[in-house]
Image (cartoon, rainbow, N blue to C red; front, side, top):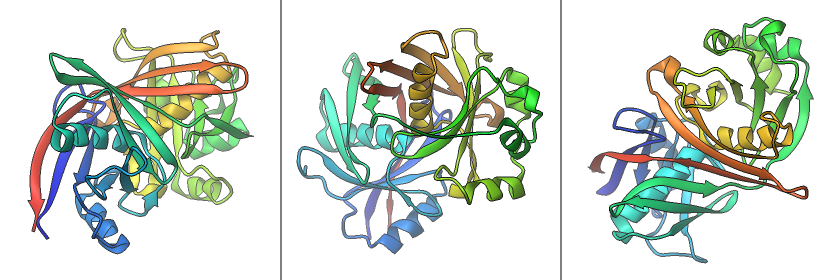
Length: 294
């Protein structure tokens, strides 16, 4: 086929950190089943396909696949694909790249250091808030005690295009000890829109960070994700809605992936403006490899 592809690390301060992503270029001729096979072969949490190098309605058509299925939106594929488009297709500094995803158009803003991309920011869809959960049920799914869960805040299903169950824990120990009970997890997600669980706490490995996060996404073929932009976007909306930091506006640093040896850094901004909540997720992207499928 001669398809060009790229491997990038997203939400990474250096190579071989953050969340890996495979990006295929000019792949509009591929069928759905071929895209799914490539995603399974790449075996990253997601793989993206840039359908054409021309713009449509101001954006680039992109599809996102996990090893198991296509998804309408995911955070690190959005940032990583925008980076590849800027570096390999546009090949000059731009303020913004828009991706046309199944969830809608997502703009990615670029900051630069000496003409090289630094932090990329995506504005996500306004978060929606759904059902809340009993602590006992979620504690059993996570193999934790009810006392590990911070009862000052709800456990809630939140979505900015892809829903997650946001679970506040009290300590870093609780986050580290969380482990999915497969049977209870499968029983839970049969009844929910959200198929993945984000746990977080205010204790961190690095003092300059504000929160520590883990994301469990077994349903998507990813037992644990090292960095999850869509989930952290949901978290950002949750934090301001429930005034986790006592404010209706946040600008914070979130660490993820430490427990699986892929330390990641995400930047979150969010503001509750009464009639809606704005959510921005940022991070750095590092090019790892380029190649061609033949």
